[in-house]
Structure formats: C-alpha cells, structure tokens
Length: 487
Ligand code: NDP
Image (tube, rainbow, N blue to C red; front, side, top):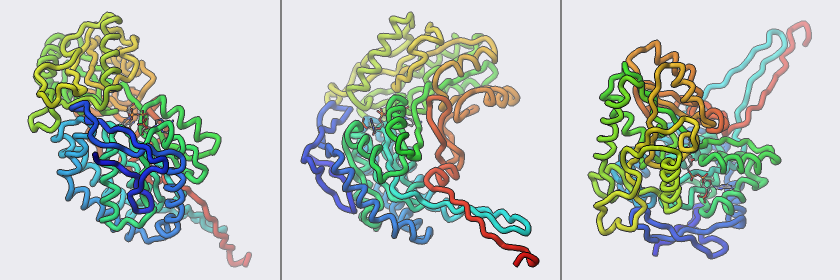
C-alpha cells in the first residue's frame, strides 16, 4: 500500500516514530494509502531544514525566486490529470471539479504571488530639511502553514505561495484527512528545482504535528485555515510567543434572493453556492433567505434542482456531488439533520443517504443534497456551521429584516445578494457584516482583493498586497539628511 512520507530538506522521509495513519478513500470507505503520523521530532527536523535554507532563499533576487515558483506552477499544470484524480480519490469531490477548479487554481496561486513580488512597490517619505523615511519589508523566517481538507491543494498553495515569494521558507502541515496532493507537490518541488529546505511538508494529526508547529520557538509566523474552534486553540497557543498569526475560519453564509432578481440566474447561483463540493466550501451559502412574495415558487424550483443533482462516484464524469470527506463529517451532517427535525424543521428534500449508488461506492460517505424549511433564524441549525450539503430556507418581508437575519450569527465570512436594483445592491452590501459580499454571483474573486472574515470567521486578511504584508515584517529606516546650514 502506498505510503505518504514527509518532505523534509528536499527528500521524502519516514516519520521518526515509524508510525502511519490510515488514509481512507471517502467514496468507498476503504483504506487506500497510509500517511506519516509525525510528531514534534519531525517538525523539529523540518524547521531546522527551513531555517538553514532561509538565508539563501531570502537573499535570492525576487526574479530568481519567481522563476523557481513558475517552474513549480508549470509542473502542477502539466500534472493536472494526476493531481485532480488524486484529489478526487483523497477527498471524495467530483473529479471534474478537482480538474476544473482546485488544481488549476493551485497553479494560479503560485503564479500570482511569484509575479506579485516583482511588482511590489515601496514608498519613501521625504521630511523636508530633515531626512527620508522609507520602509523595508523583510521576510520573517520560517512560516508554519496549516491547511484543511476541503480544498486541499488550492488552500495549501494559497498560503505557501505568498510566504515563499516574499522570501520566507515554509513548514506546511496539510490535513491528514487529505494529504495526497501535498505529498505530490513535494515531489514536484524536487523536479522544479526548489532548493532543499525551502518548502517542507510534515503530515500527521493536528493535535500532534500541527500543535508542535504552532508552538515551535523558531516559527514566528503561523497561517491557518480551518475551523473556528481550532483557530481559537491556535491563537491561544501562539499568543504567549507573540507570533504573527493569520486565521481563516468558518462561516455560516447568507444567500439572499430579492423578488426583483433575475431569478433563473439566482437559481443557478444558489444551487452552486449551496452544494458545490458537497457544501464543504467555507464560502458556501448555507442559509438561504427568499423574499416572501416569491418564496414558494423559488424554493419549489430550488428543491427540484437539488433533487436532480446526481450524487455518485466522484470519478464518474457526470457526477455532480461526490462523497463527504470522512465518516466523521458524514456523522456530523447526519446529526445536524436530526437536530433540524427536532428543532421543528421540515425536510423538503434529501436528509439521508442517496439511493442507487454503485457497488464500488456502497460503503462510501454519501449524503443527499438537503433543503430544510420552517426553522427559526436563531436555532442551532441556523447558527452553527454544518459544512455539508444542507441548506435552510427562510422567507423575509423587507430589506431591514433580511439584513438583521444575515448578520444574526457569530460568523462573517461571505454573503450573496441577488437583486436587480443597483441601489439596493450597494445598500445591502454595505450593511452585511461579512468579509466578502457577492452581488448576482458567487465565488467570483480577483486574487488581488483582501480575503478573510469578520467576527468569528477569522483574523487578518490574505490575498494580494495583504498577503505580501502578512508574511513580511515592516522596518522603518530614517536617514538624516541635514540641511546645508546644519552640515
Ligand atoms: P480543522 O480546524 O479541523 O483543521 C484544520 C487544520 O488544522 C488541519 O490540518 C488540522 O489537522 C489542524 N489542526 C487541528 N488541531 C490543531 C491544533 N491543535 N494545532 C494545530 N493544528 C491543528 O478544519 P477542517 O480540516 O475540518 O476544515 C474545515 C473548516 O475549515 C471549516 O470550518 C471551514 O469553514 C474552514 N475553512 C475556512 C476557510 C476560510 O478561508 N475562511 C476556507 C476553507 C475552510 P487534522 O486534520 O489532523 O485535525
């Protein structure tokens, strides 16, 4: 059985303990590989390698770092089929989605930040008759990067790319639930000529390998994407060491449909935003609010579309919905649907395992797209992140009310608003407490915009200049230039 090893100092290495964890294919429920169960000793080795590589990498001209990263991006693109298949098997997502979205975006992340540093500007502030102030932005050293399982290579590269481009070296800890594409990236690094120690990947459990990375004294930067509870833990572990911490956390995103919207487009967009990747995207709209005058008709069409989604083998070309990522996730979603029933919800479709799965998938972690109505906005199902193919539908009567509903959760990551009234679009976008508001679309994003969440959805922003700033330490230099009479 294939073993997923750590990538330390440019080499594939076994975990010091010699222990491995089973890696399960979610579509079949069967173990198909094993992943290194690393601990603090492996993290120490990776951090040492990253520290040793830092002086040369950080002092390399940006053009040369860029060239290395562009070669890596080219290799990701060249291997798109193999990477997409690996990600589909590892994660349960449809192969078509991994091929069209996840893997191309990983290459794009690398290219975007590799070239962004070539265009980075800095300012000088002349103080008349006194001198000049300017600000150097210098890489901090080793960046510890911890990423989740839902968009494995996409989110791993989203953090690695700006860290490397700005001259930091990296120790990454991907989710042990979906380690395969990060492992393959390590191999591609060797082919691309990434110098040993610049990017190190340590696999294993969050509470063990992840926690060792967070608390390591030689890792001054921690960039984390994952759940809010884990984010809170990481923030408190890192705080006494005054690390620079970026947190991209969970969401409970509203999807608002006004009666004046282009309803066909709103319907298409809502099906995608509710169920893409089996609802396991932090940006998915899990609370749908529909203006009362169109509620019954719109929700009726939405339910028909949800029922028509083909749930099945992620490797089949015509599959819309694959498997949930793990048994743990399947149990969590199942429990939330049971809670929805207890809280008085009416299940309009789904709510259980789909029928007609192939023999290969009979033990896989599948769940039907589920729509729930009749729940109060304050109930647990409408307040807590489920992270699965479950969406609630609630009518609203006017703009103030729906803004209150939208903002009435502890999260603030993303929102969608569907309306034909441009004034309303601006008004509502301004009032919604959320890091991103999409109007008449979903998940359309220029990589230059600051990305992240308000409230419990995160701390700090990534993307574009924000990411370049996050991974560097500003240092002000003031040069005294005395006037002629003072010299
Ligand atoms: P988790 O928080 O469970 O895990 C994220 C990563 O943290 C994993 O690699 C995990 O390892 C690791 N980890 C767990 N405990 C610790 C610890 N004590 N110290 C250090 N690392 C630790 O998230 P999921 O993997 O379940 O991902 C889903 C979550 O991610 C959802 O809440 C989703 O909303 C959020 N997310 C947010 C995004 C955003 O941009 N805001 C984007 C995508 C997802 P292990 O797997 O071993 O537990």
